[in-house]
Length: 390
Image 1 (cartoon, rainbow, N blue to C red):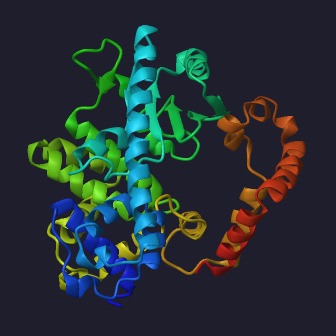
Image 2: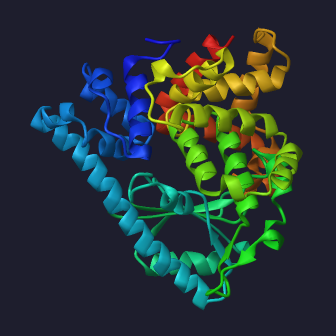
């Protein structure tokens, strides 16, 4: 272990670097590799395909057990297939939106994935598309006509559509939730006015490179400051800077980041990503400050989409303010807010309760019973996280 990093974590970062640079991993770094432990870690951060691409060139992988090799290769091939399926259906669905005059813009991963060195290296869990919220019903019909079912519709700032075997689309009417991220939601409320029209499509839009970079960082910070975000986010930041970093108007970018209050977060993330992935060096040869070590450990402990412990701890500290240990009073306030959310919380997810606040007491009882029945394990994890918070 080095600075709190496990051997699996060190090898994960090293193999990601090797994949990005097309470098064969050194025997001395990989000679004691735990393929199963590394696989579990890579899966939790959605980088198994990328790590597999590096492993395939390593001699130790060629000598590995056939079942282990099969498991890794299946993950890589599934990621490639998934991207192919997503790319095909996304284009079909967006062309339908184009034909019906619905403005739209693909977001984040569908652009970032094409900036990685190999196809399928950047795994996709879903497709995010921003669209004209006034055409929500029309968009729903398009998806239903193509065999999707609506897992979530008109309950927040995005609708979720799924279809077997792997299709998953999040259709956003706004980039950030007004309830959960008020400052970010306000900043991006009029985002349509800043978008550029695609050359060959009348109703398809895209960000300028500068605004794309700022939005990706804002989205990353949303996760980082809430439940955390995994190592793939740092890889995205590195790849993004390699692709467009030199051509950006950094004066504009930094002004935008400053206005969002995330300039320091962006700089720390960019520097750390560059140190980790700027060359295919073993982690033991990379010099990190204490703050960078803590930031890296936070990413590694979060998995792709964060965890309950981070979310609870971050919210408790935000409620209390300052650096003091979390008090019992703050924990009590947090529990009361979670058990009895106010009217404003219901605005997006439960509009009927928002319109008729006299329903709140009955809603609270229903919600508690419903969560205990459908999500009891998650509630138990949250309770444990509250107790552990310092």
